[in-house]
Length: 177
Image (cartoon, rainbow, N blue to C red; front, side, top):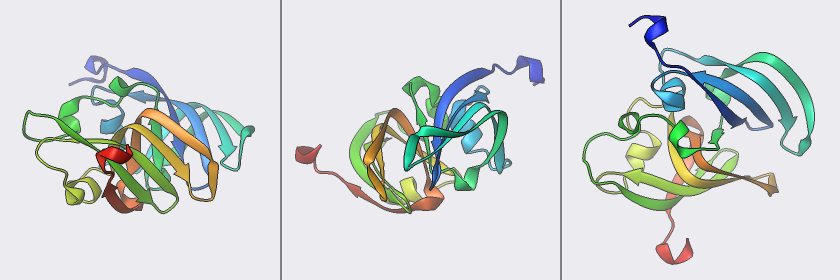
């Protein structure tokens, strides 16, 4: 497949690290953001129209760049304004046809993330946290709170979570969602 035959889209994304919020645009191909973030052959990726702020001062822009590179290993979360920008569902879940979901709390080294996880057979923490080759998992209708700055929650219809930073996962009972 030639470069010209690959469909490209520009997505608006907020990436959160342990200390910064990076608001930017990302160019993705047919596999969407899930394909870019989970590409095992790339350790960094390019973002454009970049605004950087500290998490403890979200209204203060400390940097503005036409283009920057981000290290995937240091990106804790990726927030999307539209669920359909995640990418093709075949890249997100494997096997089965019936889609199930559960509300979970996924803790990372810096964030507590609550959201809806989708699966095809049963809630499998092993598959969500460490299974397969993907570096990120996706939660829907998610809210993230930085443990040091709990007064500033981040919400998104779709949120990528860096699995290498995950410390645990728990299912939230239906009565508490």
